[in-house]
Structures are given as C-alpha cells and as structure tokens.
Amino acid sequence: MFSARVGGSVMTVRLKFHGAARTVTGSCYLVEHPGGRFLVDCGLFQGNKTIRELNYGGFPFDPNVIDFVILTHAHIDHSGLVPKLSRHGFTGPVFTTEGTADLLTFMWPDSGYIQEVEVERLNRRNASRGLPAVQPIYTKLDAEKTLEQIRPLPMDGWCDLAEGVRVRFWNAGHILGAVSLELEVATDGRNTAPFRIVFSGDIGPEGKAFHPDPEGPGGTDFLVVESTYGSREREDRSPAARRTILLREVRKALKAGGNLLIPVFAVERTQELLHDLGVLLERGDLPPTPVFLDSPLATKTTEVFERHAGSLEDVNDTRYGFRNPNFRYVESVEESKGLNKVTSGAIIMAASGMCDAGRIRFHLENNLWRQQASVLLVGYQAPGTIGDLLQRGASSLRMFGREVAVRARIATIDAYSAHADRSGLIDWVKARRPIRRGVFLVHGEMDSMTSLRQGLIDAGIDEGAIYVPEMDEVFKLAHRGGLRHKVEKQRIAAREVSGEDWHNVYAAFLLDLARRLRSRPDGAGKRAILDALHQTLRAENGAASKRRKK
Image (tube, rainbow, N blue to C red; front, side, top):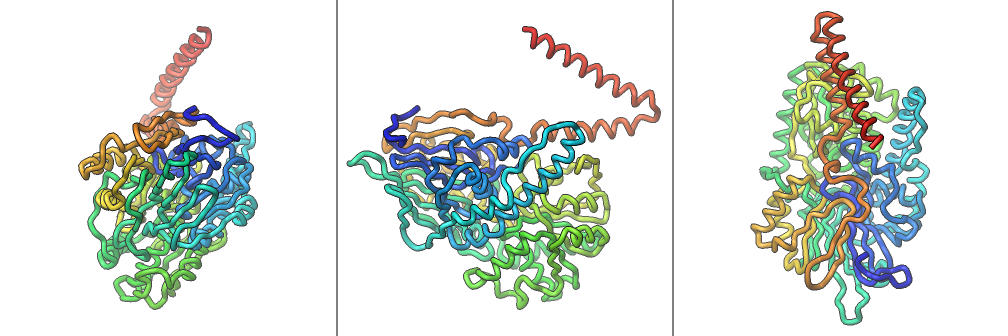
C-alpha cells in the first residue's frame, strides 16, 4: 500500500476511481483521508452486459466503513447503487441538494422495482434452462429505506461534513439539483494545507433549458472532470433553434404515417421535450397530436419539476406547462400494452433513454419492423446498448430472445444534450485555474478523453498533470512531486469497459446465422452451414481439452 495506517485511517489522502473510469457510467470515487472514508457518487453501470454485471458483484470496498456519500445529482449512473450500498451495511448520511433529494424520492424506489421485475423475468428463463435463481441488486423496499439517509444541504456557502472535510456546492447547469463539488480535505500534517478537490459532476452546456450556465470555483489542487462529449463540438442551440429541429423531425415522422417513438431519460430530457412539444402544439406548428408519456417515473419526476417551476428558466413559453391537453400520462402496464393498438399518428415517449430497460423496449418490438414508424434518439447511447446499435444502423436486433427487423426510420438529434461539448468543457476547466496539482478525466469513452486531453494541453494545462484513471485505480495525493498510483484488484479488464462485448457479438452472430440459413434454398445447404459450425466447435473443444491436460 502507499501509506501506513493508524487506528484504521490512512496517514494521507488517497483517491480511488471505482466507476466512470474510461467509460461513461457507474460514477463512484472513494476518498480516504486521516479521519475516515467517503464516496463521491455511487452510480449504476450502464452499457453492454459485461459492464452491467458489475452492478451484481461485490463493492471493491467495505460498505460498513464508508462514513458518508455526497451525490452530485440524481441521474441513476451517479446515484443508483446507493440503495445497494445501504443494503450491504452503509448507515451514514447521503448529502446532496434539495432538488436531487426530491427526485430520488421517486427514482430510487422505481429503480428497485425495475431490479425486481428484471430479475423475476430472468429467473423464469433460468428455471427453464435449469440454471440457479439470482437476486435483485436491491429491492423497492431497500430503496425506500435508503431515502431516510438523505440529508439535503444548502447551495450557499461551506458545509462541514466531518472532521477535516467540508464541501461547497456550485450549480452544474446539468439537471434539476445538479452540482459540482468543491471539497476541502485535511491531511494529517500540522503544517500541511488541506487538499482542495473539485468534482465536476456532469457539466451542462451553455444556454441549456431550465438552468443557468454552469459555475465553479477558481483555484484548486485537483480537478476531476467529466468528458462525455470531449471529442464532439455542436452548434449553439437556442430554445427557438432547438424547437425548429424537433419540429422538423416530428413532421417527418407524422408524414411517414406511423408512430414516432422517443426513448427518453425520465429526468429533465422528458420535461424539456414535453415543454417544447407543448409550445409547438399551442402555436399550431404541429396539428393536434396525442403524446403518450409511458413512464410512471417520468410522470412523477414531472411533478417534481412542476413544484420547482419557480426556480427554472424558460418555463413561461406555454400556458399549460407540462399539462397540455394533448398529453396522455400512461401509468399501468395494461395501459402501456394498450398502446400496441395505436399504429399511426402518435408520439410515444418511454424510458429508458438508451433502450436497455423499461417500457420502450416493448414499443420498439412492436414498431421497429414497420416502415412507416420512426425512432428519434435524443441522448447519449452507451456502446453496446440497443440505442447504440440502432444509431449505428443495425438492420435487425435480438429483443426478448427474438429477431426483430429494423425497417423504421432512425434519427438522432443532440439539441437536448445535458452535457457540455468539447469547447464547453475546455472553457469550464480553464475557468478553474490555477489547477495546482492535477486533472483527472473521467466519465467518458477513450476517444472522448483522448480528444479532451489534447484540447486541455493546447489550452495550456501541463501534459504531465493530466491523468486518465483506469477502473479501480488509486492515486496518492501529494502537494509536490509526481503522484504515485496503481490499480488495485481490478474487477474488469480495460478492454471490456466500453464498446461491444461478447454478448453483442453473440447476438450479431445469431442474427447472421439466421439470415444465412434463410438464404439457402434447400435443407442440404442449411445442413452444410451447421455442419461447418459443429466442426469448428469440435475443434475448439479438442484444443481446450489439450490446454487442460497441460
């Protein structure tokens, strides 16, 4: 280890990256200091199945020794594993903002319910295959109990969290309640200044709907900054320009004669789209069109936004707010199934935004094969998710164990992105100068981090002071000299963190095999393909047997 321990505490400050390291989701950073240990964020992993399996494994630390958690915002990839943390022994407070606390009141129980439903479905399949049952990551009851641990903090000024640790919140311009954290963490040296560490959380773009531009302190020792769109530049999008883009896509979909499916994130993206659709409908830019919001969580989240409407910008453009007469809020499963009978002329918004969970998958299964249907992707699509496959032009998908042809028109707009682009991130980092010791790039794919790193170097940030942590890498913080760092018991290899995994390859193989079999006119041709595959498998089994004997 890097340093000795006295009474169970480290004699220095160490920063461990247990999530969002060379990937976008699963934000989780462990800070160890002379007085104890705490987490900044504790989020669910999303993306391909291999990285999602990390949600079911053990934590790379003991939840019982975590003193408290600080959450930057409510998005599930930043907060979604806190109920699991509590289920496994964490009893401390969860510090965050009032807005985040209000959102989590609905988001955590909904996440627990989804875990239960997904595992119940999986266990039915496992039973038919003769496989053992699995347990949910956490339950709705676990999530409801964890809500009691939330302790909202004010936005104005420093707050003492523990001996030697204090925090100050800064508006991040991302979603309701989202903040960047300015932390001050004392070391054990009497004459040594505390470390100043800034965690960006997720940084919103300038001019984003509902929120002022992101802020932050000037001057810090260490900066931990997201890089989701570190390789992408986008045009400035005013509210009017954003609505023009949305109007164009909706008109195309309605003209095609089918339904328009919009996979949405329940928090903020849904409310922005509802607001803009309401404006377009009221102005007569769109004909009266039924808009179905098929997400109980998004409905409850919208109620939170209505309560906070007084603190939101740009919400006076429509007299109906989020309750336009054309909007239909779908609650029950039976109501959701009833939308299968609607084959044209409707806008169906459903979670999740990456199409990897929730009711949107059932609507995709019912509409993707229709040439008249349209799908509009309005957010980041993690590699390996269904949304990512659609965005990259997949001609067919495996959904619920079946092949579904993709004949619908697939479109993408990024005007609703809640993340700053490359220039926005560079400007935000520059405004934090002087950055005395180091910048850590997190929450991004490697191409985004590589591009952002070069942009920061071009902007005058010392190349040797920019770090791109691996999963489960630990850094010993120091006031001078280089930073010592190493990977401790890495849970997943770097090559498996992002991109397509073997599950994606397997699904693509099955689809290709089915197409090739259909292309053969007779049984003999089909048999020849299968015989060749069996021969390959037998050869692989023989090679594996030889390896075991060695």
